[in-house]
Image (cartoon, rainbow, N blue to C red; front, side):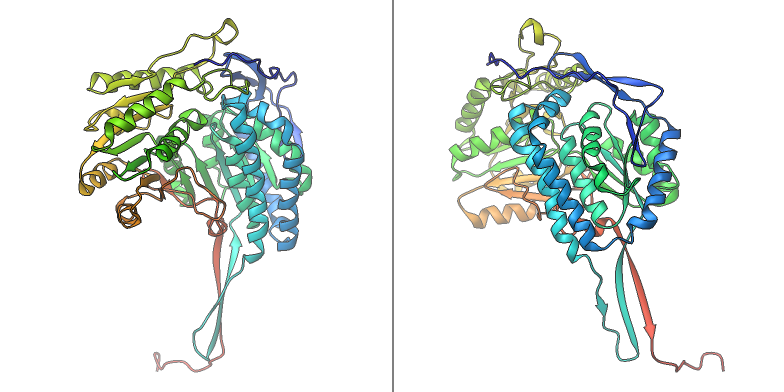
Length: 499
């Protein structure tokens, strides 16, 4: 289906978006266009930063670090809470901006992105008061204690698919731990990050939070390679993550890497298919399928394979595709026409390798106003043996592959065979079987009888080619600190080594 309701008025920003350095808005000599994926038209101009701008931003962050690192935990707690309050008070304008920027359906942006971003700041506002070291018992002759110290300037590289949530996941723990930050948003979705930091930067001393927009091959690389950067936190594609690791290798600085995924939903024969169907649709078609947590493989026991395949394919055919600004839209456009074409090409490759098309697999016909948008129908591929590229590669789009299995050993082997290890799920009425399978699946997260459940406090992150480090939890604070040990000796006796 295609949305036919009237969309919210389109956004157009007249003034070019600035860089944000040292608490000031800094114009750039050049800019590049921001394109609305729903129409293919330019809606804003974004500052194109340079390596020189990166130098200035890092220098501002280094200066600010000298005082920000000394702030008390209660001061940081209050400021992080103030960020959440300000975002909540300003909530009405964000859904349309996010939908215009990356094509995520406006209804999703309203009830997921904005409240989630605010809750991330509230969460770290709370747990920051628990940031402390510990005493290490070493006997009566010494007193040993540890202190978590901020690392310095953090380079935060933010993706285009959920920019507001992602920038919150990086800023909140980094600032709570006493670091300063230079943010580099994706060139495909920069406006929301600039607008968000504009909204809250006056809460912090100048230079604590900086934004340099631009392209990855120059601004991004200059930032992660900068000698003044102490840590890199990156969310994005696995190949880009590998390049960043190469860039930081000479300086041996730590990183957090939240990379790609190839999530599998393992459905046992006793699962409630009504619930499973709803979770499948959310797991693969939320956020247009452009999310690392997407459940792009549906692994169904052969006894229920045909029934669940029919249910999912019929529901996929009924999904409303349209303008991201239309409240009736359930699945918006993909981020760019180029990415849409890559997804379509991969679907065709899977079909040529033996997959069967059961829903979608095409670009829908749109109205004249939306003809330049990058739309693609939600797609369901039947591939019982899972032998095509659709079972191995991350498509990063609304494409589901439905596979069949008979034994636990078989399904565990097939799920674990992929290079990624971010999220998997198990659906079973037998919790013994569910936990047995969950224990054997190689991924940072395993959901049982649900999908996309990411409450704050639950660590988020992967293994294998899905990266390392965890976000969204108390332990995340430690990702942005270095442990310092102070060992005081009370014993003046020494062994006779030199007599």
